[in-house]
Image (cartoon, rainbow, N blue to C red; front, side):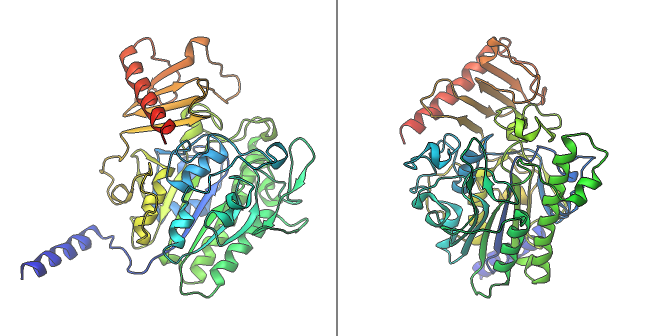
Length: 455
C-alpha cells in the first residue's frame, strides 16, 4: 500500500510540474550556426534583424541568456559540443588545418573521443551530419568514423555556397561530400541543398528515431544572403547589410525544416536545439565585422564575452516549458548529458565536463551546475595561449585578445580580471585592485591544466 502511495505522489508531482517526459524517445535536431553574434536574433534584442523562425523556436521553448560556447573558434568549439568536454579534454586545442598543411592528417578530433552521435547510435538512433565538419580529414576522424551513419557537407572550415570550393590561399579545393564520396552540385545554393537533405531524412520510413546534427555554415563568410534579403536590408550600411541578409537567409532555411517537422506530424516528438559556435567574425573576409555582440566585448577568437557568450535555444513541445528564459550559466558541453537524459541514452564516456541542464530548463530558480568554467585555445603546455576561467561572477583572462576593431590591450593586461556583474563589457582590468582574486583564479586555471596534462 505504501508503495502505491509513493507512486501516486510521484505522478501528482509530475502533473504539477507540467512537464512529464514522453514515453517515446524523441527525434533530435541539433542546429549549430557558424559565426553568429551574441545578440544577432530578434528574440535576443536585435532591432534591425528579421529572424521570425528562430523567434518562433524560442517561443516554443527555453532561451538561454548566459550560455557559453566551448571555445571562441570553430574546431575546438565543435569538439566541445559533440563530446561534452572542454576542447582540451577532447584533444582539440585549435582549428584543424586544411589537408595541404597537414598531409598526414594528424590534426582532428581523436577517434577515441565519444560523440553525441556515437552515444545515440548505441540507443538505436539513425545519425546524420548535414553541413560543416572541420574536425579532421583521415577516415577515422571524418563523420562516418565518429558515429554518423550519413554525412552530406564539407570537411573543412568554409566554402563558397555556390561552387562549394574551399578557398583560402591556393590551390583552392572543391569540398562537398556525401559520406566519403565527393559530389558536385555546381551553382546550387548550399543552404538549399542542406534543407533538401534534412527533408529527405525526415521522409525516410523507420521505426528508429533520428539524430541530425545540422552544422550550418552561416553566417560565416562569404556573406551570400539571398537577393530577397539583400533587398530587404538595402538601407543598412555595409557590412551589416550583407551579414543581416545572410542571417535572415539562414533563418528562412531553418523555418523550412521546422515546417517540414510539422507537416510530417513529428514536431511534437522532436527535440530541437540551436546555438552559435562562438561570436561573430571581425576578419577581413567578413568585411571586418557585420555581427553584433551587444554589450559584450570582443568576438570570434576572443575569450571576452563577445567571443564566448552565444544565443542558445531548446524546444520540445509538451515536455519542456515554452516561451521562457533562463539566465543561469550554461554551456555547450551540457547538451550531451541533457540529450542523454531526454533520449534515455547511456553516457558512454563518464569523464565528461558537461552537466545535465534539465533542472534548469524546468525551473528558472535552479542553480547553475558549474562552479568553475575553463577555456583555453592552444595546447595545455603553451604558456602564451589565450585562456579564461570563470568562478561565480569573477572571470580571469590570460593573454587576452580583443578581436574587435580599434580596441587595444595594454602590455600590463597579460592577466585581465573582471567582475561580470559590475562590468559586463569587460572594460576595466581589476587585476591590481584585487590581487587575491587573481591568485585564486590563476590557481584554478593551473589546477585544471594539470588535470589535462595528466590525461
